[in-house]
Image (cartoon, rainbow, N blue to C red; front, side):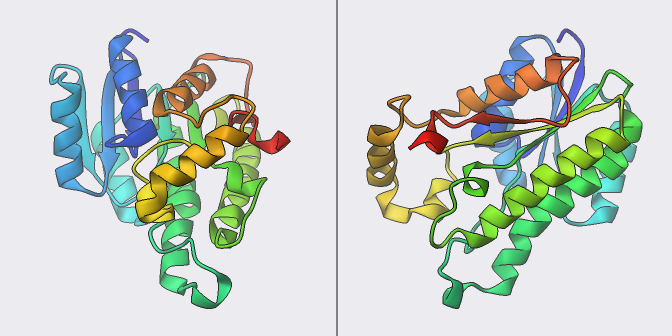
Length: 240
């Protein structure tokens, strides 16, 4: 990936941060984007590569901000979005607030749609777009209706974009349970207990790490014969 230019939306934490580190180690120039300036600054300090790393504050649910971002950064080789705003969305149906559901849709459906709209013209024919859906689309649970529906919608969008934007490749990674900060919104103080219980159930014998998902995204970025796919990286979760 020497000197390739990669945009990672959601690159300030979790899976996106792990991917940014991987790409920097392989010699890429990386831009990490997200809504929070403080998180972006912390990620920049953590990654420690000022010669090859930029940060950009953007709300991908706002089209004018997305358009301005791509106008500013110019040519790219690959675009990835791991963004997911799910705070308040994991609720039983009577407690779901529309505002929380809308944030999920904006971050995991409208955001990718706008990224593709404004980002695809910046990519070469060999470029790629990669998004992150999730196991909830296949193993929905009580309290997870909104996230399950949006993940499924995103995967449908990926297949359609792979046709429309060809030969640019468009794919998704569908993680299982991965130990990232997002679990603070899902399980709260029971995060460690919840993840440990799932680890005992999974054929892989553990929950995922951010690096597992970074590896999967890296494969999709580099494999020129894979498009319109959703790569399952879930430790066997769909089998149990």
